[in-house]
Image: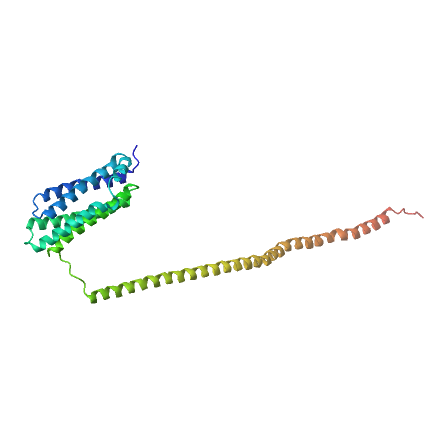
Amino acid sequence: MATITQHEAAELWEIVRDHHLAGAKLLWMAQGVQDQHLRQMMQQHAHRFQQAAQQLDGFLHSGMGQASMLGQTWQPAGQGWQGSFMGAGVQGGQGGMMGQNPHPIDVLAAGECLKECKSMAVKCMWGATEASQPARGFLQQLAGEHLHMAEQHYRWLEQRGLYASPKADQQAIQTYNQKLHQIAQSGQQAVQLAQAQLGGQQDQFQQYQYGQQQQYGQSQYAQQPQYAQYGQQYGQPYGQTFQYSQQQGQPFQSGQHYGQQSQLYGQQYTQPQVRQ
């Protein structure tokens, strides 16, 4: 069962392919190289490209199990083969400087190997950002090995005066340092301004919350007299009704007077008449 994602598998496939192609190209170019030390260095680099391709292929096909075992067969950071390559590069460089000018094929081969090794270092580091462990650690280490290979080809070209590497003058270095110091100060000032703005926004937010609370309390208490006004307004009809009832009750009170008069008249009509 595969333990890597589809995206990681695609990245590994491209890196394995490029290592196979680069190793074959270095072996093919080494056949026409005249400098013995350069030819030996290119052949060793080509074999390392092919070995790395097999190890990366193990990560791709066996779910990282086989690749972990393969990774234990070579020294960390490639210290063993780097030391032998560095010695061969220095010896070859000294011999080339004392002898005649390098062959045009040697110059083209060294330049192409330099470009290929630098390109593969970048590809390995990019692939490491998309890979999981242990493939990520292996790709990071492999990128360092490719950079060391590129340095060896650079040294070979430089020792023969075929690499343009003029030294920076003191004035240019001072200008770079001055600009970097200004950039660093700008970064510090930007952080301080951001902190000050953040602190001011927090104070404004707290003041806003406190103002909202006061406004809410005042509005809550201010609404109570309105209820009293509503009560007075609603109480007026009831007061009018009571007043109307008092006014309407007056006829009933005057009815007593009419009753007394009716009784008085009744007594007058009911009194017997005495005949004389």
